[in-house]
Amino acid sequence: MPTAYYTHPVCVLHDPGPGHPEAPARLTAVNDALAISEFDALHRFEAPEAAPEQLQLMHDAAYVASVLEAVPEQGYISLDPDTALCPASGEAALRAAGGICAAIDAVLAGDVENAFCALRPPGHHAERRRAMGFCLFNNVAIAAGHAQSAHGIERVAVVDFDVHHGNGTQHMFENDESLFYASSHQWPAYPGTGAASETGVGNIVNMPLSPGAGSDAFRAAYRDVILPRLREFEPELLLISAGFDAHQRDPLCQLNVTTADFAWLSQALMKVAAEYCSGRLVSSLEGGYDLQALAECASAHVQALLGDA
Image 1 (cartoon, rainbow, N blue to C red):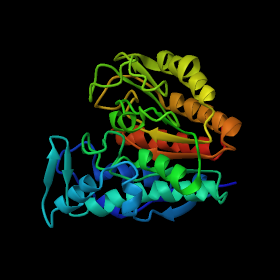
Image 2: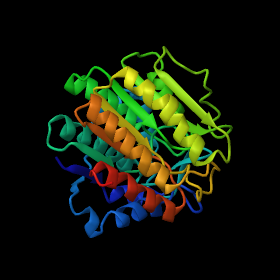
Image 3: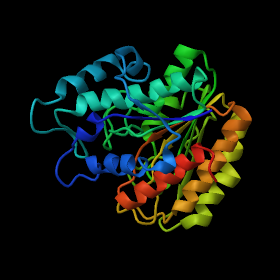
């Protein structure tokens, strides 16, 4: 079955301000990389807006309202030192969450086997009542809740290979044994969470890696710890927080991961999805701030979803 690709033009218009690393050019780089004939097999869709009840699966209604009401008619509004809104931000955030929920619907209906959602703003730092780290709504966490509430999926796993720990996803999952969260990330680094001792109710797996760790340590974290624990969980649906900022060229951290490492991990996660989830996998873009590395890694990731070695 095919791979779906969800994006939307308004997600390019979300602009946190001059010099901000989470820049519109990030999504343009991904879209351009996946526009070539090599990716003609993708089934392409425009992301719909999330409904309020979808956002409220993981966020308080008052928080959702406060974010959307804060969107300015012009200029910028800062929600924290790293997270800003422009006039397009409200719709972009709704489509970032809505697109991954639509991907869940398509995958669980059997219309496609898997999906990649190239949408922004990213989501994995957003907590139930708090925007932070460039993130407004927690797209992947909302999608997990949507899979359970709308489709009756009982066991949902999220694997997060962004270089920064997804504190928001952990925050939302850590007391719910039906949800699994595993993260590899640089330590120490923003946001300061993700110690190996943070295990939730046995459903959280954190693999902090030292600056400069490189390919061997990154692959070992997955081969020896995260992938075995993921298999023990036996997910019915696998979600990926696909941040590519662990790459050796990325300016924000120093893990020194390569494009080949992301391809290897993507293929390994596809294998787990085939073993436990009937292939059902949905991936959503998180970080990645070197445009060349982001384009290369997103291409390698999507090639794996398409089944290309």
